[in-house]
Image (tube, rainbow over all chains, first blue to last red; front, side, top):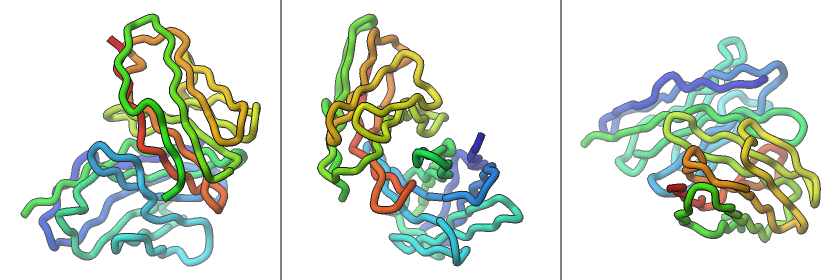
Length: 113
Length: 112
């Protein structure tokens, strides 16, 4: 069975500093990988996805993620964090068959002034 | 934004009562999903549907049932609500590409 680990429950970053959120997955085949963001009291918004091809993928709001098969990782990055980026971030892996997703437990990003 | 609505958005109910949550989509997508979100657990799949009258269990299906009689509607029923089912429930549908899911606004359910 597939699984996703997000090692950091909370991360605090200063506004303007760079950000990296970690995601490790376990999946037997080539994974479909996603990052979602959830602002307080809101639903989940898709930030970016990896299906195949270029291992560095660009998403919305200036985010990018890099797929590293050798490390089973799909880390999310942003060069300069804005206060509006404060939210919870979820990594997910897609399984074969009926397009189901397995989510990590999330990382809460706090942005300090 | 994907056309997904959930109703009700908030509900408080008593232990032992039946509860039905509705997910409605206007995208005519085949696949629909119900998740629950709890602090420290992320999102966990309850049930999903891959067509009208075609459903299957997810990771945390005990105590829940679903029905899909029309493409646009996917109902989640708690036959006899328990306090452990207090949660935020999200519906999702797949987008244009396989696996890419879009989420509804959620339903906050409190079982007292």
